[in-house]
Length: 385
Image 1 (cartoon, rainbow, N blue to C red):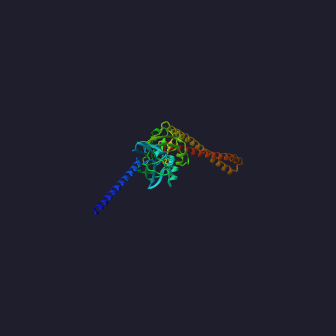
Image 2 (image 1 turned 90 degrees about the horizontal axis):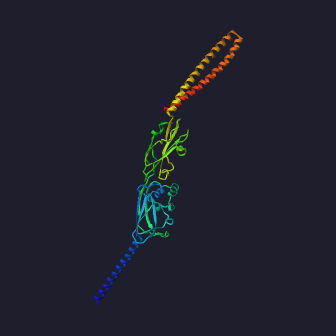
């Protein structure tokens, strides 16, 4: 009898164990079914290791970031992209799920890009980044991580429909290029402009895609700050080159025959013509001294010759006039010694005229001397001395 009771207990325990295992297996299958159903979307994030610091570039340059979504099921799934951007370990931006578009993900593979991950009207910036990025449209330098997943359309209760895929990247602040040649303070003679080659260092670090460089030359006015001049003065010429760091002087733009002072610089730009570095925009300008043409220099040399001839004549006239003044002065002294009233009166009138003539010729000589010196100075400037 006791043996039968023991066997019954063993049978009941075995039956209960079997039921428990079946229950656990059933629960596991149900949970697995829910997990598979909720994770029927698989995402893979592809991101350039050095994307642009300008958020708008992520949208305009598709090669910057892409999100591959695979629907492993047999039905189209409605979902939204949920992107979270972290800087140095802290969340600084995320998708505004209520503003994100509801996407229809058909079975198979779908690909989305930067404009889908971060639409301009659906980005929420956090902390200090909020003001700086909204104002400048650029992210600060630092170590970032971008994580993306797909979620359900009900934003009140986030239902994750896919795995999370994350990518790390680093943003470095761009450094303006350095001008190389013509060097600061270089001179060029009018008529030899086509021989000038402008060159500069590339933008650092190298951005994704080609860089446009705007070469600009403006006239530098007296007492004007070069940086303000390059920003505000009307360009004497301006041209854009792509993916190279040099350019020749435009042959159709001659220098003024009288010369002048100019400055030149370059501005790195994106494909849309937007300056890459703000607020500086332009590299440190270099001064370029445009010397008059050879013909103009020869005219100045001819002017020096004419000025010298006139100067010699005025100098000769001055000394002749001065000698006459000395002679009249001597005669007046003799007349005064003889007490010759008539002669004294006559000579006094003559000496007044002689004094006036000497003074006028002296002033003329000084004026012509200044003109002569100025002519020499202009000629030296013309030939670059």
